[in-house]
Structures are given as C-alpha cells and as structure tokens.
Image 1 (cartoon, rainbow, N blue to C red):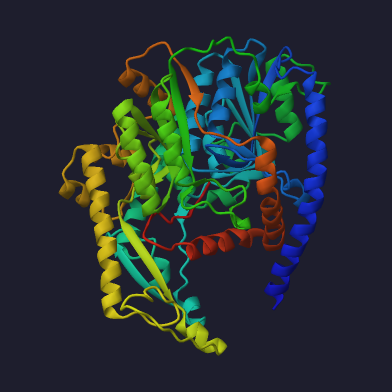
Image 2: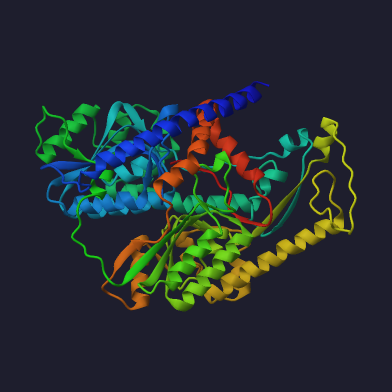
Length: 589
C-alpha cells in the first residue's frame, strides 16, 4: 500500500511539475533565442587557462540533457564520449590551454568509453602539457582515467574504491510464483543467459564461465594500464585489491604509489594554478568541455564526406511511455537513416557507431537489411562502443569492417523468447476468463491459461529458426562457416580483444580508427566527417519528452537507489517477442 501511494504521488506530482516547467521552459526558450541572436557562439579561451574536465554524471555516445533533473535534486550530467575526446584534442593544440584539471567527482559509463577517453588523455601528454587529477573519493572508472595524469591527488579523508568488478543478477522466479506468474522459456544458445532470471535462482555454470572470462579480460586491461602509468608491479596491485586495502586510511594509496599525495581540494587546485602560471589569489581560469566544443576551427567543409551514424540503446519499437523519456533506443527508423545515406552522393562512406546490448530480433533484421543495401552502394564500417552484443552484433555483422575497443562487450549470438502465464494471478484476484475461437491457435499467447505442448513446440521452432537466420547473417557477413559461427556463438559474450581472436571483429580501436578504415575503403584522402543522425528541432523534441522526463525525475527522487532495480524490472517486462538481447548489469565503475 505504501508503494502504491508513492507511485500515485509520483505520477500526480510529475504531471503538475511538468505543466509548470513546460510553460517556464517555453518562456526560457524564447528568452534564450533573443539573447543569443546578437551574440557569437565562438569561444576564445583566456591566457593560461586549463581544461577542467569534470568527471561526474553519466557517460554515453550521444549525451541527452534532462531539463527537469535539477528541479528534482539530480546533479548528474550527461557527457558524450566524442565531445570529451574533441575537447581534449582542442586543448592539446590551443596555445592558451596549459593543461587539464581532472575533477573526478564520479562518472558512470561503459568500459569502452573510459578506454577511449583515457587513450586521448595519454595522447594529450605527448604535447608536453600537464594533467593533474583530484578527487575526494575516486570511483574505479574515475581512477582508471586519473591514473594517466602527471599528478594524482586525493583528499586526506578520501580514498579510491579499487576493489574489482562484479556482475549482479536479479532473479525473480520466486517473486513470480508468489504473484501467480509462470514463465515459459524458449531459447537457443548454451550461454544465452538473459532468460535465467525467470527460471533460476543463480547464474548457470555456463553463464558464470563467460562472466568470469570477460570480466577478467576487462579488469586485466584496466589494471595493466594503471600499473603501467603508475609504475606499479602487478603483484603489488593484486595485493592491494585482495587485501581490501581500499578500505584503509588514504595514506595507503600513497604507500602503494596509487596517488602522489594527500591534498585538500584548494591545495590541489593551487597546484594546478602554479603549473598553468595563474595567480594563486584569483579564481582558477578554466575552460569546460562545452566551451572548447565551440572554439573556432579552421577546417573547411570538404566535398567528400564520411558520415557517422550513431545507434545507441536497446533495439525496440518506439516507446512513448514515461520510462523511456530521455533514453536512447534504436528503432526501425534507423533503417531509414541508413537508406538516406545510401542515396547521398556526397557521402563516400559510412561509419555505423553501434552501442547496444540488443533487443528485438525483428527490428535487428530490418536494420541488417538496410546495412546490406548501403554496402552495395558504398563502404560501411562499424565502430563498436561499450556494447555491440546480440542484436547489436546482428546489425553490425554485414559491414565491410568491424572495429571494437578492447573492452567492448560483443558477440552474444543467440536468441530467446519469454511467454508469461498469469492464470495463477487471475485466480488470486478472483478473475475468470472464457474464450471463443475459430481456429486451433487463434488464442496463442493467451496469458490467462497454461500453454499446451504443441504451442510450446511452435514457439521453440520459431526461436530456432531465428537463431539459424542469425547464424546465416553472421556467416555471410564475416565470411565464416555457420558451424564456426555457431561454435563461438551459443549466446556467449566476448570482449573486443577476445572477439578479434575469433574473427568476430577486424581491428581494435576507437571511432577514429573506424573513420580511417572507411576512408581507405572509399579511396578518399581529402574528406570531412559529419554526424548523420537526423534530429528533430529542439522545440519539438522538448515538447515530446518534457512530460516523461519530469515523471522520471520524480520517480527517481522517490525510489532513490532502488530506481535501477525498478528500471531493470520494467525492461524485463518488455521482453516480449523473439529477442536478441544481452542482460548484464556490471558493477564497478
């Protein structure tokens, strides 16, 4: 009952807030247009500036801003990986930027995104400019980035949460039984574990095997990079981790060479000022990522274009529910975007940036078809982000080349379907149903009764047929036999470096490497890079998402840390139809 009132309160309050904010937002929009009409958008850094890279909020391929978050007390910001990369590159060549100040508050994101930013920070140091990192309390992801800095400081009462990685499963079998819900599971793939929460109490042996494998690969890459940058022996690093020394006094971080010193924030920032040649008595002169994105560039638009098309999020139908507000999804509209690029004569090649754990098998097939059609007209190279697994791999496999980060999670070539039987729920609620039908399977999928064996056989056959099609698509795209694909498929997840060894990807690297590959395949050397995704005008997008984002902010404020669990359950409820999806929630960054 308490939860019911919480939900009701959240919905009502969300509507009221949304109405007020939409009105205020409209006024703010008009004022902003008026204010900006007479001003220049080009930013010029001041002398002896530093790029203040505030590591907080969330990291993604395409950042979205929720204008209602601050009203509900949310401090999270959304950072786009490529925006951060571009800002660092601008800072490297701009004479007025003397260094970078990493303010590591705490940012969440995928491993590949962190890998791309860290690589860029390492390249920045080649210019001879400095990087100083500071945090009150380093998260593992932030420390991974900070470890490349010339000087790493932490608050004397702070620390670094270096403990390793973990993947947690949420199993709802017993909960479903209490609610009178029975799940019928249909799948192909020994390692296809997305359905385990419905019928198991813990990870299967096969799932545990693959989790151990790819978590070990990711963590190995992270700790190796840390040890190399900090000049730490791997044995010492393992001792620190396995003895739980992250829970000790911050001095232990100095003892193990993980940080260079214990400093309060002002002391660390004074160090940055001295290195940049700034007055210690004045406020630090900084430039933000947003500032540097608007620095005037001398590059001229070229006739030849390499288009980058971003595909981020779950593969599914367009969802207008409030839980989808602000969330990135890949719908069938992505196929239309690909066809537009195929027809654009100025675009000589396409980089398809895929960052998706998968989803609908049907929509994945439609996007795959559009990729093959584009490939007939011009080269297409896939650049994999944090995830390009299951359906994410399905839409990638037909490309001319596939480039992944070492820590990208990919593969997961497998298929599943879930059907709910809620007859027990109906009985508990005193609800009875009856049906009249014209044919044997007219009521297939009726959730108010148990499934017959012949119905189960039909659905399992459909899942197996979809898996065979998935194998065929991968076999054709990668030039490998179906048996070979099946051997490394079976729903198993691989990291990018593991996938390279097995022929699922062609090269390791980030978006730049994929762009270079695309230009090479197209035979062009003089080109410009453009973002291809069609965007609605701001006002239309604002009005469509405003109400939903306000509701999400309210629910977050009510549920707090439990919001992630609620969101996971909502996603599990949406796993209808035949799915090619990877389910993991990896803890640690």
